[in-house]
Length: 278
Image 1 (cartoon, rainbow, N blue to C red):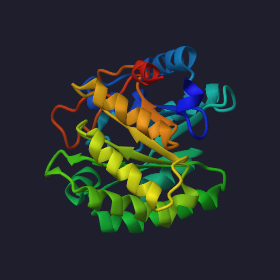
Image 2: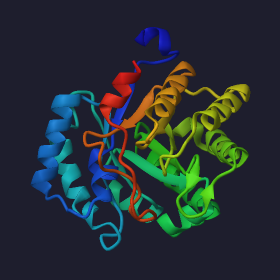
Image 3: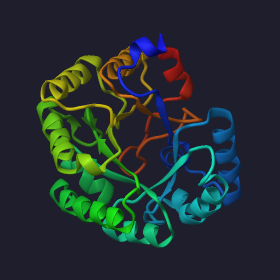
């Protein structure tokens, strides 16, 4: 059944426990605790890639304070084994340069289809973000051509501040990033920030992308838990049928979400949710 569902490459799971998961809870994990959790994830789930932290303001997201130290310890253990790609999130050009100075190879960048969300989350408008992203991508690729870049496109259904986003607005923004930066981005990740993406809206977006000739092999999905799992399952399967093979998952699905913009973020999608769809 696996091969009959997948149109393009095999399933690729991207673990976000150590970044999106841990940033959403008050408890601050020590470096030792993060290493133990990372060891468990790799040993028990063997993801294709893992995001281990972010270079952000310690005052805003104190859970990420030791991310660069953790990156150096973790990459020393797994950087050249298990075919594991290790990512660090950097929200702007200044922090991307800091990560480069610490020998980070793979980067997660963030944008949104909601200007309100992007401004609150990063202190940059969408317009400013587009200018910043070009400079960030140029910096990363100039440093080392084979550095990988993941771009989160947040709020592909709803903004936690202003509500539902029009599907045509979402489609327009996706097409901008696909045409402008697609050749440099290995994972263009559609992020359902609020966990409210509905199958019919997702189908409209995917069908429209396919009609425009977009190849979805390098697209990914970042989903959050929903009350109606059948809806999530339909989204995952329809994405697979159309060539999407990259999915964000969490070893601890009860946690996850944007703590900067949401009071009660919903948990990330767990590994088992993806397995159930197969």
